[in-house]
Length: 64
Image (tube, rainbow, N blue to C red; front, side, top):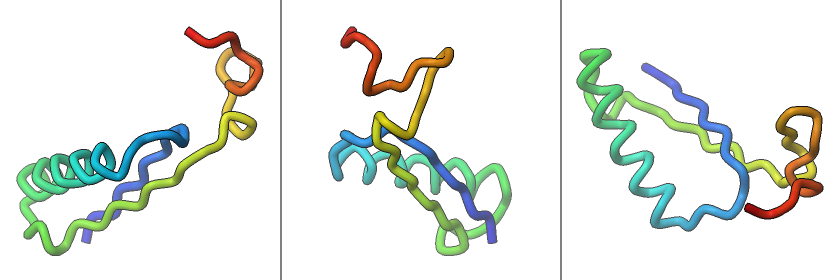
């Protein structure tokens, strides 16, 4: 049973997450030769205060 963990910054919609897990489940099922029912996906959402890029917390970075 493949288990995929995905870390993303919070703010994605349920529709975006639904589309992601649908696509990922299909790809994992096909590449690992397992039924889709065996694929597990765990989504971890991080607040900007818990994620940094190049030494700067995302919550402190200027908006792009």
